[in-house]
Each structure stands twice: as structure tokens, then as C-alpha cells.
Image (cartoon, rainbow, N blue to C red):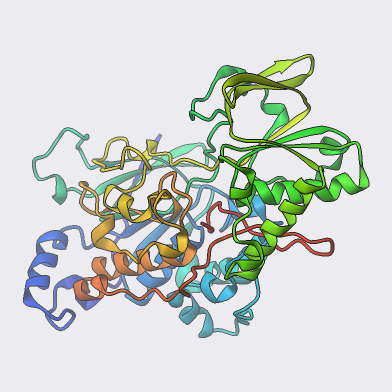
Length: 469
């Protein structure tokens, strides 16, 4: 049984009604009226109640624009809780959206110290959860509500006549039923978590790898809670970034207690030294310490390194796994692997937008106009310039893909950059065209990239999952 819900506006800001006092130019008002004069009685739909989705909700709240948030999980930050043990590298100063902070500071919320690095759990408990419980947000967030598709009302992708004048229809799976909800605009903040890249270097999922899934972990496992799985086993880690290094550092602690644990590091860099970064010369001390620690482990022979190794296939063999790949000029098989941890990043899933018109970069799978700004071959997360509504527009008017998903496969995303994205978009949707064009992102010159760091006493690390770079 299908239910059709229509959400009526209780209060719309003067800007969205086209009053000339809101924007600095009459041209902007004309542009806004042409684009948004229809469907003003419908909400903006936000998909995903993570940091970026809730930031969008906070901005729309302040701008008095009605919205609804769909979260597939049972709580806010549901994906973050899967890596709750990991510590971010970006401190609280850059982890809290300005609009969200403004709303929280109107209550008895206790702000975390700006220079402290939160764990994923702390990010949820001390920020996202209090934000979601504010009455102005709480009533508009729907949990256990999985968006399975979005279309234009009575239109498929092929239909063009008056397309922009039709509202979006969002198909939401909830309580074993489908609800169809209408919206005037879509902000997709679903991220890329849960859609990992495979172990193979060419990005192809093979059945042989899928047959080994009981012994493969994609992401950063909580080693302390899985001691029996990894202790005294041969564990291979695939990946040359911060997530892989963090995984190896955690496994090295296990190795001290269980010395028969064998660690193998598989990456594609020309030299393993390229993974160490600046070490003691790094402008960010914690990031440099990360490289120093993994460098030491490799030098001590605690980690066996294969690089550049291009994985061609993962195979099950005699209750263990084998990695077949090109190592140098030869095809090589790494045998006897008990557990495999793949830290090869994630990729976006555009299946919910299948009936909408998208412009996606063919290489990065990012929003097309964003691709030149974030290409990891040219940029680190600290060199990606601020961008907003204009860059993130899709051919499907009113649709915006934001946050980690907007970056596609590129690993250069920063949470603070995502906050700037939704600030600009919500300004535009409220009628503040000039505000949407401003740049209000403030980051140190070195950037605030995410890393993973662990010492003998305390894990101090972060991931490039939904909030890092």
C-alpha cells in the first residue's frame, strides 16, 4: 500500500516569497522568482542525518524554510557510529557548523573545547545528538526511513515539458511500507559509507572476492573488540592512505600481545616512503607523527610491505585467502592470509537518483563542476577552495548532492567544506542569492586533513570516511 504525503509550509522566509529586501540586486530576485515561484508550499528534503545533513537542517531552520530529514538508520550519525572508536584529526573548531552552533548556544548545551580532537562517538554524543533533539529540528527528522528512489511527479527522466515546475517525489521505505513524499528541492547528504571499493586495483568486484567476505573487513575495524579474529593470524591490509596506516598501527598493538600475529601491507605507491608524509617536518604535528610511527614499524620488520602491488584477484584457498597481483614485472601470489582489511576508499551510489538528470564526472564520480577543484592528483584537502550552490547545481533543477558524496571517489573532502556547501545552498533556496555566492569558509593554510594516529597510551586517530579527507 502506498501513502502519499504532502507537507505544507507553516512559515516561509520573506526571501523565498521574492521580496526585494532580501537580495542586493533585482536581477537576483527575478532569477529566484523564475526558479522557485512554484512549490513553495512544499519542504526541502534532506537525505541523511549526518553532520552535513543536519547542518543543512540548521541553516534552513534559521532561514525559516520548511524541511524534512530522512535518515535510514535509527539515530543521527548512524554511519559514524560504525567507526565510533576512531578519533578525528580535525578539532572541534572545524567540526561544528556555525548555524548549528548558533541554535545549540540558545540552549544549555555545553560546547566542547575548540582544540580537542573528538572520536566518532563524541561527535555524535556531544554534537549531533543534542542538535537533533532541539524541538525546531526534532519534529522534522524521520528515522528508519530509507529513501529508495526520487523522481519528478508524473515524469520519468525522459520527460522535459514543464519538468522544473513539477515537485520531486521521494519514495521512502518505512515500516514495511512505501511512502511517497513531495518536496520542492533535494539535498542528498547520504555520503559514501557502506559502498566500499573492492580489493582489486582496477576497482572491479569479482565473485571470488565476494566469496571471502566472512574474512574481509572494509573500513577500520575495532581491533580491541575483535581480538580472536585477528590475534596470531596473518592479516593483510590493502591501502596507502591514512585509514590503512591507522589499521596497521592498531594491529601492531595487538601484535605486541600476540607476537605470532603477522602483518602484511599492500599498497600501490612507487615507494613505501611516499606513504609516510612529512613526518617531523609536517606542519601538522599529529599527521607527522602518524608517518613516523608507521615508518618505525616497517624499519623494525613488524610489517611486511608489498609495493607497488596491483591486486588482480582475491581467492579462497584451503580455508585461507590468496592475493594474486602484479608485483614489479611479475604476477605474484601472496599466500596464507587469514584476514584481509581493505582500506581502499569508497564510491558514491547514485541509484536513488536514477530517474533524475545528473552531471557526474566520469573519473572522480564527483559532481561534474566540482571535479577540477578536488582532483586528488592535483589537490590535498587543504588546497580545495571553497565552493557552493553554483558549483553543485545539477541539470535536475533543485537537486543538490553534497558532502562526501559530492566528492565521489576523491579523498579530499573536509567536513568544514561540506558545511560551506550547505550554507550556500540553503541561502539560495531561501532567496538570498548574494549570500549563496559569498565564501564563508575559514581554514588554516595547511588545511585540516584527517589522519589516524595511535601511540602506546591512547588512540588519537581519524578516518576519511564521512568527515575526513
